Image (cartoon, rainbow, N blue to C red; front, side, top):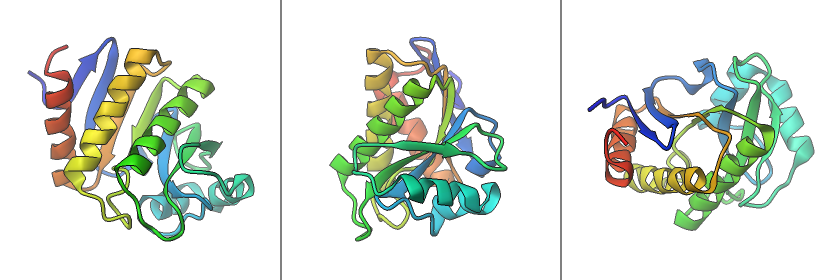
Length: 181
């Protein structure tokens, strides 16, 4: 049993404790608002590390609805794209359905772009205030659904600066996938 990753139908799901903006992946997901403004939390970190051009390009493509996603350049990041998938309106409220729609939209956009590796932050747990455990459960369930339906992805990183969140990813992946599949 390896607790740093699980394999499911030739897709490797890894658990990463650290700064998502440092990862070398094809795409990094931004848990956005529908206007695509990048203020605090992960969005702010992506903008600070990657550059203002990420937000400028995103805002030009917005507003978008929850359940859709858009890609932008990744600026100075090591990724090729930032995929912006809203979990909330500007009221900063989220729920299970919005997180599920955001996760699904980001996974679909990744496949449309031919992305093979992607990093997700915890969706809805920052300003949205959603439970870390429930966010992890929803995210892992949507990954399983996307892999079952067919995806270009070969590696999915579930990242967070919170050890507690990374542990929730591990627990939920163990429940949904089991170890060693």
